[in-house]
Length: 131
Image (tube, helix red, strand yellow):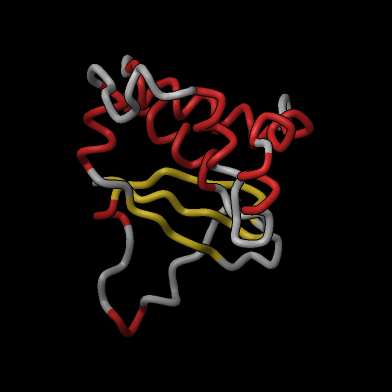
């Protein structure tokens, strides 16, 4: 199993684990997104928060328009394409997930084997990012 490790600008890290079912779908035949579902609306839904929910519900197309072409929108589009159609390599799948889920304050990410991370609780804060 692999873990996505995000590095923040203050050099702290955030880790994320992805379900093997999601990786299997992205690298297989997809199926996580119904073909009948509006693809553009699904992209817009990934930008919806509690704060902007009313704007999304009022007119999701107008909500999405200014976001089109941004790096985040392109990352979401790539992920949802794999989620719907599959066909990604394992590396492409992890990168699509990492880019879609990247925290706003993250500057970079790595995909690492979980076995490469320390398991001893005494040393859990000893793992650090090497450039």
